[in-house]
Image 1: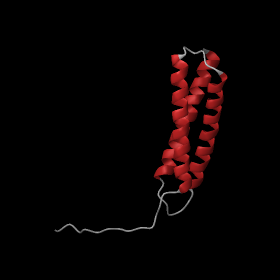
Image 2: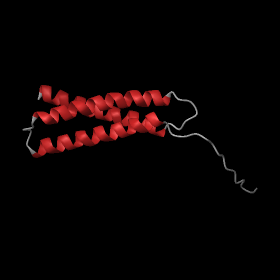
Image 3: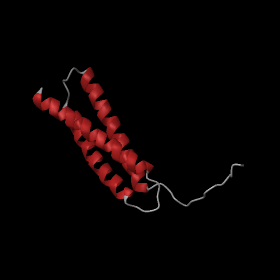
Image 4: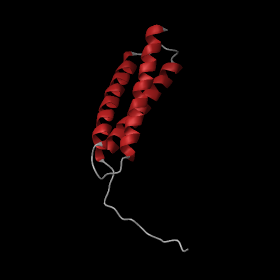
Length: 106
């Protein structure tokens, strides 16, 4: 039996809000990684600007989760960036929660 070569063309596209959620997740994750690296190099003696960066990263993560969930509800779209954005932003919030928990009880 010969293999049938068939192509399916579609007009689906990635959601813009999902792409924005992924971008916010990457920005938050890079900011958080930089903050942790610089804090480690300074042996825990960090200026207040690192805390402000963490707060801004948390705000970006919350906005990214909301954008990811809203973009997931759009119909007839590709959802790769929606899932990726939600996952990255949840990861950022989880790491920030662990850092805050360790700082409070260490």
